[in-house]
Image (cartoon, rainbow, N blue to C red):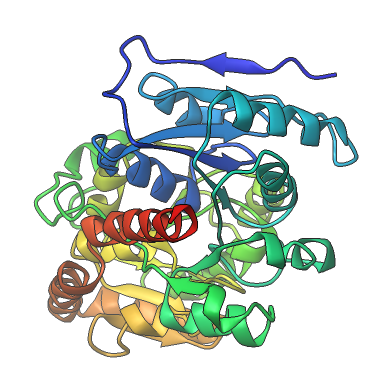
Length: 385
């Protein structure tokens, strides 16, 4: 039986009207997790009291939040640990939770919603941040649709996907676009220290990716593209920011492609704005995405983007205007667009500026936070009369 770990900040925030519990597996450094940190930190403390429940370990971002809000962890020992339902139910009852928001699919979506129903939590929401494997909803999670007040998609096409492919009722699907802190991520951030740390001259062309090293992110295709790029632009370097189960295989592939000198595995980092600033081009080669926050952060930093034409990416990456779109898995196309941007830096800078303007207009962090707050309060008011 796991030992529930409770972490409370040294100073409590002002008492809020609605205690909101966010339920997630853990909080490593990743897109959805970073969004959750930003959401929690920006919520209006006069109206909400956010709390965090990690079914497993807190992770680096959870540890950071533990200094600011109440956090709870280690409620689940394994996939078949049925005792998690009792523990979660008791937690929601003891915390007098007014709203439960599960983040992502899988165990947290199932146990979080079922426990919220047993604890008679007024508002039950599920935020979905991607499409398909490894975040496919699954039959067991679909069975709990009647217990769920709303499913949250991160962009209009993602909302349609939840209705048409996941078969959720249209009346229960809400779209709240991802948001980015345009003050934290801006073209004025100094990335020179990153280049000095890596021994890279200011004039060297650098591409970069910020993503967990998991199969669906398809870093292998990016390395293949980089091998092609290197034939035309031998001075080009690639920064791979993030960590995960694919790291050993990717490092081996880097060696086999003879790219050890120009590919840098930087692992988990907390200085993402500086890393993005050090790049000339941001690139993504995922097999599936919804509305990746890493792209929005790169655009807010004024970087052109090369990304696959999947999910809601075409809404942010306007082909030929804020970057280039490629077909998923088309290694040659990724290499071609990277070379194009490396060889024409003036064009790259113009695309980056256009991307920055687009993010400021459509994907502000304040709009995302306001969307969550209005949804929670609206459902709570309706159900409580």
